[in-house]
Length: 125
Image: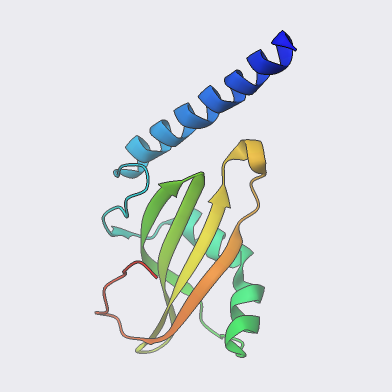
């Protein structure tokens, strides 16, 4: 019984430490939505992993699918809010959850907002 409690405590401490480190790395605080940043290749890769789900959800295949910028929220993993250019002057906002590594690392589409413009702010949705 003592080893089970010790293992449970170790997992909890590890998860808490991972959230703290991720929040510092992403420039925010746990639970808060961070500042907007330019998208890089890791964000493009992230949205590519959920592209099929995005296209299925909106009922459209995109010829263009380019991450422009993003915000992130540290929870028991990270939620990414990504502005994606899908055509000239046409943008969508994609919300993707990536869990902590101890819970798997497969990203999951949470939501999509369509009909966005380039100057529309990325906000919590």
